[in-house]
Length: 115
Ligand SMILES: C[C@H](O)[C@H](O)[C@H]1CNC2=NC(N)=NC(=O)C2=N1
Image (cartoon, rainbow, N blue to C red; front, top):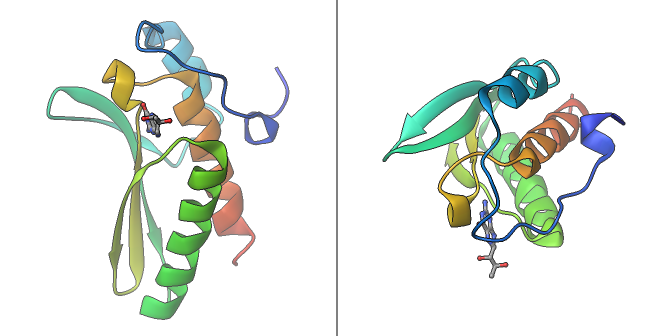
C-alpha cells in the first residue's frame, strides 16, 4: 500500500462499507496522532493541532478546507485561539471509510509543512 498521504479519495457511495476493525487498527498505524471517537453514533477520527496564535490556526484551517474542497471530502473543523480541532468521517455511510484515513494523513502533512 503506497504511503497513505499520497493516496486520493476513492468514489464512495451510500452503500459503501465502513472499515472493519482489522482495517481500522492497520490504518491507525499510519495516523498515530489521531483518536477514534464516536459522536452522535458516528465513529470519527479526531486530532487537535496546536499553534502559537489564532492567525496560524486560521491559516492551517484554510489549508485543510482548501484540500477538502479539492478532494470533495470534508471534515468538521473547530478553529480556536492557538488550536484547530479536525474530525474526519464519511457522512453518507455515517462512519469511517478509508478516505477518512487518507485525509487524516494528508492533514498531518499540511501541519508538518507549517512547522
Ligand atoms: C454531494 C457531495 O459530493 C457529497 O455530499 C460529499 C461531500 N463531502 C463529504 N464529506 C464527507 N466527510 N462525507 C461525505 O459523505 C461527503 N459527501
